[in-house]
Amino acid sequence: LILTGTCFGFADKPVRRSGAKVGDLLCVTGSLGNAALALKLMRGELKAPRDVEAVAKKALFQPLPRITEGIIIANSGVVTAMIDISDGLALSLAEIAKRSNVGMEVYEDKVPVLSDEISSDLDLSKRELRELAYYYGGDYELLFTIDAGALENAEVMKKLREEVKMSIIGKIVPQKEGTYFREGEEKEKIDEKGYQHF
Image 1 (cartoon, rainbow, N blue to C red):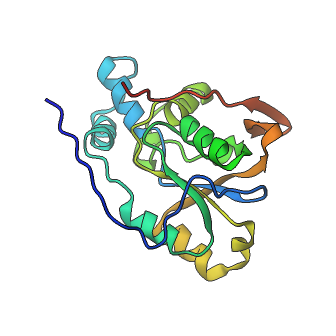
Image 2: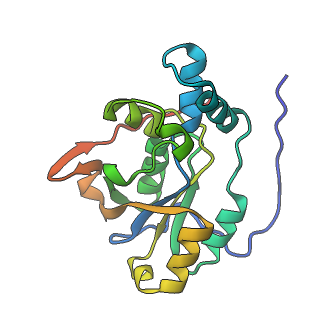
């Protein structure tokens, strides 16, 4: 049995996926990969302490959509594009890039992978962490872009960092450069894959 709900209404300040521009900062809320970790634990592909498993499963089975955070971001006056990350970070990056006709540079060491109460008890490789954060989905966090000039507005940045738990993970680049990870001088293309709907 599958129940699907549909909501109709009006948005005062709709934030589309098509507004990102070169020079904008790339941001996410919260941490990524928690739901994917739960799935791997349930499949027996990874092992973790019970308390860690409980936190991960809560992220998978009781996700908290970032509605309040989305409203705060939309009302900030500095957001240019936004999308939820329920299908995985990689697909969400690709979606904004396509709609906005831009490329994206992601600073891999800035992406918040796994919540603090989980990450300290696990010993995972960089490749494993990347898979959890980018390609599985199930994280009801937000990916959004803000005007680079926002960095000069201390009040707005304080609100975004404290109330939205925002992390700056990269920047918007020209479309011809594509979407890629950057680590030091090394660049690697981000595969366009993630959760696939029927």
